[in-house]
Length: 521
Image 1: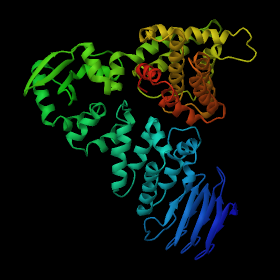
Image 2: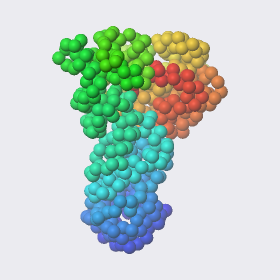
Image 3: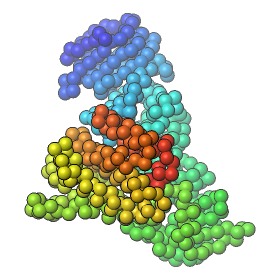
């Protein structure tokens, strides 16, 4: 592809020209400056830009059309002028999303590259509000047309958070974006714990919904007090709340989860719900509300009834049953202080506490392991479980087996009726998910070099799962994920691990058991 690779392009007049397969390329730290150039009335196809900065009113007024504009690196278009832009005249290239890694590089703030949400940030440098909105609407439309994008959105909390944040920065109202936020982002996010940094954005979207619609997203809504008040205006919830308040005399109104099919609800006192959300204790004074011929009755909530009602609310059931706490107990021996690093005991205990808090949800924010000292300490702790080709004694494998068996026992996997080898397969996949997510950029802001080591650590349990696989199809499925990791297709591997599609396609029962014991990340 011919192109411009100078450090600056000044006062060039390209008006009326036709550009085909042309690239404008700078370098990281040395952007190509396009100063005072005239691109008015051009027609173009297959244009690439990377590390480009437009200055001094470079103009693209009355362009006849640009097909397939590809930002292979960031671009600063703040001083570019587009005049009275007509929607659809400039088309973004689908090459931005040619694989999962590129999708995350372009749309996700928490990714594995040096340029977070590169496409969004390039778009947001555009002052022309019509073009800015048009580009974001094009991105949204691609999620409808490309199933692989929708799959990534469904299985990545980080991608949803980033898209929510950037789409809300759209300068002009867009029905397409509003519909996408409500039908896709909120729908896929419905079973997520809300992080502090996303509360305002989620509230902004949810607050525009009617009480009837909010009932579809009760787990999200009940974490946002102001939006919860709107949902509680629903006539049935209002009646349930009036009954519950006769029992609960505390100053703060509690939380209701309503199940329309059975006309029943669970009432949780406010302080107990707050404790549940941060992973401290399960509610002790929750009550069952039942509507019978218009009359509301309140009775104690027994475990069996709770489990039945919460079948379609896995996040709430996960917190209530303490899945994260059980897994934290499984992993706690990893932070026993080895003799050779006893001098760092306080630091190791601090790191262990921070990591396990991510599982129990008693965490104030994501881990920050960017400091090389923290990474070094964790590697010291985890290295004994990392198999090495020089380890003829298989000592690392034996240590992982101890952890896998500990998971089987703590999670009572034997009660599932699976054979011992199948239980170990479940535990190995579960531990893979835990470690892959604990050290993902969503929870832990490690640099990409450190993350690759930790992802390799998670891979060790995948290798164990391969050996425990109860049949050839599951073994082949696990091997596919291992191959993704070996080929540095980190994003694709994490999406597979989180979706469990490689398991459910071969054994839905085992996938269901893994989901049942997975914590909320």
